[in-house]
Amino acid sequence: MKLLRVGTAGAERPALLDAGGTLRDLSGLVDDIDGALLADDTALGRIRAAAGAGELPALDAAGLRIGPPLGRIGKIVCIGLNYHDHARETGAEPPTEPVVFMKAPDTVVGPNDTVLVPRDSTKTDWEVELAVVIGRTARYLESAEEALAHVAGYAVAHDVSEREFQIERGGTWDKGKNCETFNPLGPWLVTADEVPDPQRLSLRLWVNGELKQDGTTAEQIFPVGEVVRYLSRFMTLYPGDVINTGTPAGVAMGRPEPKPYLRGGDVVELEIEGLGRQRQELKNA
Image (cartoon, rainbow, N blue to C red; front, side, top):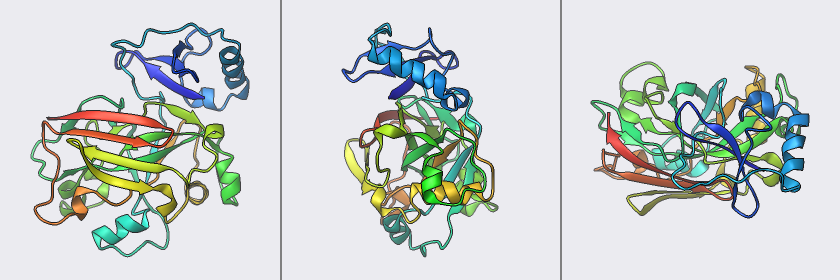
């Protein structure tokens, strides 16, 4: 299923995109697309049954904002330097264990919402990423196979980053990762049954129409199942938690000087195979 949330920011309603591309209203069945729903097999079964029977009312998509596909996100856990080609372009040694940092849930915006370039920023960068959404409580998992069974679905994430704040201002990466609007998510939450192999997905990103990133999740140093297993050894993952699994090569930081960092007025578009497409216009904060 392709689950999503539509409407004005803070007042989104749950919806489903059917196989024919028609937007369907889920508000008569569920209150929201969130961790509670993803952990409820009975409720998900009702949605599948209603969709299969053609019982869901259609929504007029014209002019309707698409919000983040997940409400009430618990935490966003991010994996840094998780692609062989991205590690090479930045001159970093491939990590021997996953590099972990956090983004606050309030960085999340819709897939086509405005992204704000922070005040005093000179190094705002792009990163297309596969987002993993947890559907079952995960703690101390023993195998990658067990870990994948705890995944509810997948989405496109844009891990916007300010490199000076991240690297040159002391402390951890958090300063460069948690600026307002720095995690566009969506358009859809695609349930795990529609993604048979998360290590066979193409990722692409364009800036002002120019292709910048063209990669594949096959390049991940730590595959999705291993990332979920590993994290469950250090923290409990709950339904509705999100994991951003890293970005392939092609970011501004990895390019020759002068590096083409983002500015107000730029347009970024990104997509992951089968998971949909985003488009953001950048404005100065």
